[in-house]
Length: 310
Image (cartoon, rainbow, N blue to C red; front, side):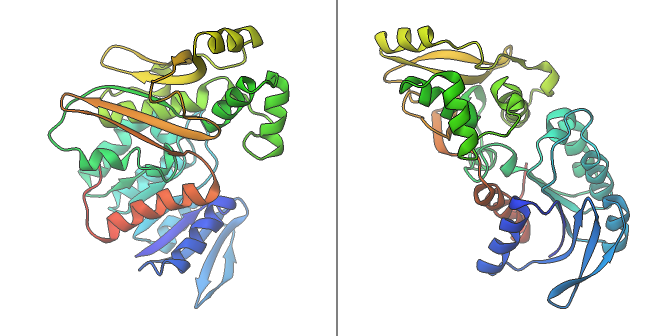
Protein backbone atom coordinates (compact mmCIF):
# COMPACT_ATOMS: atom_id res chain seq x y z
CA UNK A 1 0.00 0.00 0.00
CA UNK A 2 1.26 3.47 -0.90
CA UNK A 3 0.20 6.07 1.65
CA UNK A 4 -0.09 9.84 1.55
CA UNK A 5 0.18 11.16 5.10
CA UNK A 6 -1.51 14.51 5.79
CA UNK A 7 -0.27 16.21 8.94
CA UNK A 8 3.04 15.43 10.60
CA UNK A 9 2.72 16.39 14.23
CA UNK A 10 3.10 14.03 17.17
CA UNK A 11 0.45 11.60 15.87
CA UNK A 12 1.91 11.52 12.38
CA UNK A 13 5.39 10.85 13.72
CA UNK A 14 4.06 8.08 15.99
CA UNK A 15 2.22 6.53 13.03
CA UNK A 16 5.36 6.49 10.89
CA UNK A 17 7.30 4.90 13.74
CA UNK A 18 4.64 2.19 14.23
CA UNK A 19 4.66 1.40 10.51
CA UNK A 20 8.38 0.70 10.76
CA UNK A 21 8.34 -1.15 14.08
CA UNK A 22 5.42 -3.41 13.19
CA UNK A 23 6.78 -4.09 9.69
CA UNK A 24 3.47 -3.16 8.07
CA UNK A 25 3.24 -3.84 4.34
CA UNK A 26 2.81 -0.16 3.48
CA UNK A 27 5.02 2.77 2.49
CA UNK A 28 4.54 6.48 3.05
CA UNK A 29 5.10 7.98 -0.40
CA UNK A 30 4.48 11.60 0.58
CA UNK A 31 3.91 13.72 3.68
CA UNK A 32 1.71 16.79 3.38
CA UNK A 33 2.28 19.61 5.88
CA UNK A 34 1.24 23.26 6.03
CA UNK A 35 4.57 24.11 4.36
CA UNK A 36 4.10 21.81 1.37
CA UNK A 37 4.68 18.20 0.39
CA UNK A 38 7.71 16.00 1.02
CA UNK A 39 8.11 13.16 -1.48
CA UNK A 40 9.92 9.95 -0.69
CA UNK A 41 13.13 9.28 -2.58
CA UNK A 42 14.36 5.78 -1.69
CA UNK A 43 14.42 5.82 2.13
CA UNK A 44 14.46 9.59 2.62
CA UNK A 45 11.96 12.39 2.06
CA UNK A 46 14.33 14.48 -0.01
CA UNK A 47 12.08 16.20 -2.57
CA UNK A 48 9.83 19.01 -1.38
CA UNK A 49 7.20 20.96 -3.33
CA UNK A 50 4.79 23.74 -2.45
CA UNK A 51 1.54 21.89 -3.11
CA UNK A 52 -1.82 21.66 -1.39
CA UNK A 53 -3.17 18.31 -0.23
CA UNK A 54 -5.53 18.19 -3.23
CA UNK A 55 -2.67 18.91 -5.64
CA UNK A 56 -0.52 16.30 -3.92
CA UNK A 57 -3.31 13.74 -4.27
CA UNK A 58 -3.24 14.11 -8.05
CA UNK A 59 0.56 13.85 -8.18
CA UNK A 60 1.02 10.96 -5.72
CA UNK A 61 -2.06 8.86 -6.62
CA UNK A 62 -1.77 6.89 -3.34
CA UNK A 63 -3.72 3.81 -2.38
CA UNK A 64 -4.65 5.37 0.96
CA UNK A 65 -4.85 8.92 2.31
CA UNK A 66 -4.05 9.03 6.05
CA UNK A 67 -5.29 12.29 7.56
CA UNK A 68 -3.76 13.35 10.88
CA UNK A 69 -4.29 17.07 10.47
CA UNK A 70 -5.93 19.53 12.86
CA UNK A 71 -9.73 19.53 13.06
CA UNK A 72 -11.71 22.42 11.60
CA UNK A 73 -15.26 22.34 12.93
CA UNK A 74 -16.35 25.38 10.94
CA UNK A 75 -16.62 23.50 7.64
CA UNK A 76 -14.30 20.48 7.86
CA UNK A 77 -11.90 21.90 5.29
CA UNK A 78 -9.48 21.27 3.74
CA UNK A 79 -9.85 17.63 4.82
CA UNK A 80 -13.48 17.27 3.71
CA UNK A 81 -12.74 18.16 0.07
CA UNK A 82 -9.68 15.90 0.17
CA UNK A 83 -11.74 12.93 1.37
CA UNK A 84 -14.45 13.42 -1.24
CA UNK A 85 -11.90 13.77 -4.05
CA UNK A 86 -9.88 10.75 -2.92
CA UNK A 87 -12.90 8.51 -2.36
CA UNK A 88 -14.38 9.47 -5.74
CA UNK A 89 -11.16 8.09 -7.28
CA UNK A 90 -11.39 4.84 -5.32
CA UNK A 91 -8.65 5.89 -2.90
CA UNK A 92 -9.23 4.77 0.69
CA UNK A 93 -9.20 7.27 3.56
CA UNK A 94 -8.04 6.73 7.15
CA UNK A 95 -8.45 9.62 9.56
CA UNK A 96 -7.83 10.73 13.12
CA UNK A 97 -9.55 14.04 12.33
CA UNK A 98 -13.10 14.15 13.72
CA UNK A 99 -14.42 17.30 12.10
CA UNK A 100 -15.30 16.10 8.56
CA UNK A 101 -17.19 13.08 9.91
CA UNK A 102 -18.90 15.04 12.69
CA UNK A 103 -20.18 17.48 10.06
CA UNK A 104 -20.70 15.40 6.89
CA UNK A 105 -20.68 11.72 7.89
CA UNK A 106 -23.36 10.58 5.44
CA UNK A 107 -21.92 12.40 2.43
CA UNK A 108 -18.48 10.93 3.07
CA UNK A 109 -19.77 7.38 3.52
CA UNK A 110 -22.11 7.59 0.52
CA UNK A 111 -19.22 8.76 -1.66
CA UNK A 112 -17.06 5.89 -0.44
CA UNK A 113 -19.79 3.35 -1.18
CA UNK A 114 -20.41 4.66 -4.69
CA UNK A 115 -16.76 4.32 -5.62
CA UNK A 116 -15.94 1.09 -3.77
CA UNK A 117 -13.55 2.86 -1.38
CA UNK A 118 -13.19 2.47 2.38
CA UNK A 119 -13.11 4.94 5.26
CA UNK A 120 -11.28 4.04 8.47
CA UNK A 121 -11.96 6.32 11.41
CA UNK A 122 -11.35 4.28 14.56
CA UNK A 123 -8.97 6.91 15.91
CA UNK A 124 -11.63 9.64 15.88
CA UNK A 125 -13.33 8.15 18.96
CA UNK A 126 -11.32 6.69 21.86
CA UNK A 127 -8.15 6.55 19.74
CA UNK A 128 -6.88 2.97 19.66
CA UNK A 129 -9.59 1.58 21.95
CA UNK A 130 -11.95 -0.14 19.46
CA UNK A 131 -15.09 1.98 19.85
CA UNK A 132 -15.76 2.18 16.10
CA UNK A 133 -14.32 -1.13 15.00
CA UNK A 134 -16.29 -2.91 17.73
CA UNK A 135 -19.34 -2.43 15.48
CA UNK A 136 -17.71 -4.65 12.85
CA UNK A 137 -17.80 -7.68 15.16
CA UNK A 138 -21.36 -7.22 16.41
CA UNK A 139 -23.49 -8.51 13.51
CA UNK A 140 -27.23 -9.16 13.61
CA UNK A 141 -27.91 -6.83 16.53
CA UNK A 142 -29.91 -3.64 16.79
CA UNK A 143 -28.41 -0.92 18.95
CA UNK A 144 -30.86 0.57 21.42
CA UNK A 145 -28.68 3.18 23.11
CA UNK A 146 -25.14 4.44 23.54
CA UNK A 147 -23.67 5.81 26.74
CA UNK A 148 -20.13 6.70 27.64
CA UNK A 149 -17.33 8.97 28.80
CA UNK A 150 -15.70 10.24 25.63
CA UNK A 151 -13.37 13.04 26.72
CA UNK A 152 -10.26 12.34 28.76
CA UNK A 153 -9.54 15.97 29.65
CA UNK A 154 -12.87 16.54 31.40
CA UNK A 155 -12.75 13.13 33.04
CA UNK A 156 -9.31 13.91 34.46
CA UNK A 157 -10.48 17.29 35.79
CA UNK A 158 -13.57 15.77 37.42
CA UNK A 159 -11.46 12.98 38.93
CA UNK A 160 -9.11 15.53 40.47
CA UNK A 161 -12.05 17.59 41.76
CA UNK A 162 -13.36 14.44 43.45
CA UNK A 163 -9.95 14.12 45.09
CA UNK A 164 -10.20 17.66 46.47
CA UNK A 165 -8.83 20.08 43.88
CA UNK A 166 -10.78 23.07 42.64
CA UNK A 167 -11.80 23.25 38.97
CA UNK A 168 -9.05 25.79 38.31
CA UNK A 169 -6.40 23.69 40.08
CA UNK A 170 -7.46 20.52 38.26
CA UNK A 171 -7.43 22.26 34.87
CA UNK A 172 -3.98 23.69 35.55
CA UNK A 173 -2.67 20.23 36.45
CA UNK A 174 -4.26 18.72 33.32
CA UNK A 175 -2.54 21.37 31.20
CA UNK A 176 0.81 20.79 32.91
CA UNK A 177 0.58 17.06 32.13
CA UNK A 178 -0.43 17.66 28.52
CA UNK A 179 -3.97 16.31 29.00
CA UNK A 180 -5.53 19.71 28.28
CA UNK A 181 -4.69 22.31 25.65
CA UNK A 182 -3.61 25.84 26.53
CA UNK A 183 -7.11 26.76 25.31
CA UNK A 184 -9.21 23.84 26.61
CA UNK A 185 -12.59 25.25 25.55
CA UNK A 186 -13.53 22.50 23.06
CA UNK A 187 -13.00 19.91 25.79
CA UNK A 188 -14.45 21.58 28.87
CA UNK A 189 -17.56 22.90 27.09
CA UNK A 190 -18.51 19.41 25.89
CA UNK A 191 -17.90 20.08 22.18
CA UNK A 192 -15.28 17.35 21.68
CA UNK A 193 -17.46 14.70 23.31
CA UNK A 194 -20.41 15.89 21.21
CA UNK A 195 -18.42 15.47 17.99
CA UNK A 196 -17.48 11.93 18.98
CA UNK A 197 -21.04 11.09 19.96
CA UNK A 198 -22.33 12.30 16.59
CA UNK A 199 -19.94 9.90 14.85
CA UNK A 200 -20.93 7.00 17.12
CA UNK A 201 -24.65 7.67 16.60
CA UNK A 202 -24.18 7.46 12.84
CA UNK A 203 -22.31 4.17 13.19
CA UNK A 204 -24.44 2.35 15.74
CA UNK A 205 -27.87 3.97 15.51
CA UNK A 206 -27.74 4.93 11.80
CA UNK A 207 -29.04 8.30 12.99
CA UNK A 208 -27.80 10.60 10.19
CA UNK A 209 -26.95 13.31 12.71
CA UNK A 210 -24.21 15.94 12.81
CA UNK A 211 -22.61 17.69 15.74
CA UNK A 212 -25.20 20.44 15.27
CA UNK A 213 -27.89 18.00 16.44
CA UNK A 214 -26.17 17.22 19.75
CA UNK A 215 -27.28 19.12 22.84
CA UNK A 216 -24.18 19.53 24.97
CA UNK A 217 -23.21 21.08 28.28
CA UNK A 218 -19.69 21.07 29.64
CA UNK A 219 -18.19 20.86 33.12
CA UNK A 220 -17.45 24.52 33.89
CA UNK A 221 -20.67 24.73 35.89
CA UNK A 222 -19.74 21.79 38.16
CA UNK A 223 -19.10 23.19 41.64
CA UNK A 224 -17.31 21.97 44.74
CA UNK A 225 -20.77 21.60 46.30
CA UNK A 226 -21.83 19.27 43.46
CA UNK A 227 -18.77 17.09 44.11
CA UNK A 228 -19.41 16.98 47.86
CA UNK A 229 -23.06 16.05 47.31
CA UNK A 230 -21.97 13.26 44.96
CA UNK A 231 -19.64 11.89 47.64
CA UNK A 232 -22.44 11.88 50.22
CA UNK A 233 -24.63 9.94 47.80
CA UNK A 234 -21.90 7.40 46.89
CA UNK A 235 -21.71 8.91 43.42
CA UNK A 236 -19.30 10.72 41.13
CA UNK A 237 -19.92 13.50 38.64
CA UNK A 238 -19.01 12.45 35.08
CA UNK A 239 -19.46 14.10 31.69
CA UNK A 240 -21.73 11.52 30.06
CA UNK A 241 -22.48 11.19 26.35
CA UNK A 242 -25.84 9.55 25.62
CA UNK A 243 -27.75 8.70 22.45
CA UNK A 244 -30.81 6.68 21.52
CA UNK A 245 -33.38 6.96 18.73
CA UNK A 246 -34.84 10.17 20.16
CA UNK A 247 -32.14 11.82 22.29
CA UNK A 248 -28.52 12.77 21.68
CA UNK A 249 -26.79 14.78 24.39
CA UNK A 250 -23.65 15.37 26.45
CA UNK A 251 -23.97 16.64 30.02
CA UNK A 252 -22.58 16.20 33.56
CA UNK A 253 -24.40 13.46 35.48
CA UNK A 254 -24.28 11.84 38.91
CA UNK A 255 -23.03 8.29 38.43
CA UNK A 256 -23.81 5.97 41.33
CA UNK A 257 -21.44 3.37 42.74
CA UNK A 258 -22.04 0.07 40.92
CA UNK A 259 -22.51 1.74 37.55
CA UNK A 260 -19.88 0.60 35.02
CA UNK A 261 -18.87 4.23 34.48
CA UNK A 262 -18.26 4.93 38.18
CA UNK A 263 -14.66 3.66 38.22
CA UNK A 264 -13.67 5.15 34.85
CA UNK A 265 -11.28 7.78 36.19
CA UNK A 266 -8.39 9.95 35.03
CA UNK A 267 -7.95 10.23 31.27
CA UNK A 268 -9.65 6.90 30.55
CA UNK A 269 -12.73 6.76 28.31
CA UNK A 270 -15.57 4.27 28.19
CA UNK A 271 -18.37 3.29 25.84
CA UNK A 272 -21.46 1.21 26.53
CA UNK A 273 -23.30 -0.22 23.53
CA UNK A 274 -26.68 -1.64 24.52
CA UNK A 275 -28.32 -3.82 21.88
CA UNK A 276 -31.40 -6.03 21.65
CA UNK A 277 -29.14 -8.98 22.54
CA UNK A 278 -26.60 -7.70 25.08
CA UNK A 279 -24.80 -4.72 26.55
CA UNK A 280 -21.07 -4.34 25.91
CA UNK A 281 -18.81 -1.93 27.79
CA UNK A 282 -15.28 -1.10 26.66
CA UNK A 283 -12.82 1.00 28.67
CA UNK A 284 -9.44 2.32 27.61
CA UNK A 285 -7.31 5.35 26.81
CA UNK A 286 -9.04 7.91 24.65
CA UNK A 287 -6.13 10.13 23.69
CA UNK A 288 -2.37 10.34 23.20
CA UNK A 289 -0.24 10.30 20.03
CA UNK A 290 0.65 6.60 20.22
CA UNK A 291 -2.95 5.56 20.91
CA UNK A 292 -4.30 7.66 18.04
CA UNK A 293 -1.60 6.35 15.71
CA UNK A 294 -2.47 2.79 16.67
CA UNK A 295 -6.15 3.44 15.92
CA UNK A 296 -5.16 4.51 12.41
CA UNK A 297 -2.82 1.54 12.07
CA UNK A 298 -5.62 -0.88 13.00
CA UNK A 299 -7.73 0.57 10.18
CA UNK A 300 -4.82 0.22 7.76
CA UNK A 301 -4.43 -3.43 8.75
CA UNK A 302 -8.09 -4.07 7.96
CA UNK A 303 -7.74 -2.42 4.54
CA UNK A 304 -4.54 -4.33 3.72
CA UNK A 305 -6.24 -7.60 4.65
CA UNK A 306 -9.31 -6.81 2.53
CA UNK A 307 -11.69 -6.61 5.47
CA UNK A 308 -14.94 -4.73 5.16
CA UNK A 309 -15.13 -1.45 7.03
CA UNK A 310 -18.32 0.33 7.98
